[in-house]
Image (cartoon, rainbow, N blue to C red; front, side, top):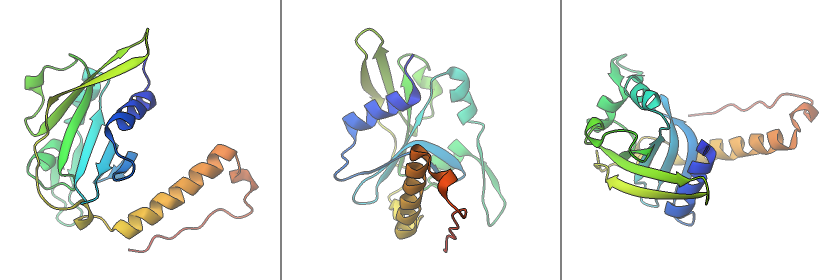
Length: 179
């Protein structure tokens, strides 16, 4: 069975331009995690949510967001569809035929994939383009410099994790993020 990491690798390798796009996987923003987040040079952003099962798909519509200032609560897709969301576009990346297209909100793009386990080839079909929910740059909502610093720190931590070097540190790393 195809793993989410393999699907992510196949998708971003085929559709993302690493010379021009900032491509993040499992990136936490707006009170939930984006499986794939692509931000182009102009700050235009597209979030892709990977779903492998109908149950996982249905749960995406139960995710809630709470405005930190007003304490008002929203469902994730209500927030996305009204444009009160940092990403310009949102799409689902799903196995071919898993969900009837009429059951996917009109603001969402639909990208279906088929993985052939014999040849280990994965093909992608864009069934529906996502609606552009607003024209604002991603960087209007997030501090670009701070985000890049956090990414660099996280990359360093991952490097230590992979090398198994955390236990070699005498003092735990102390990073304070300033807004």
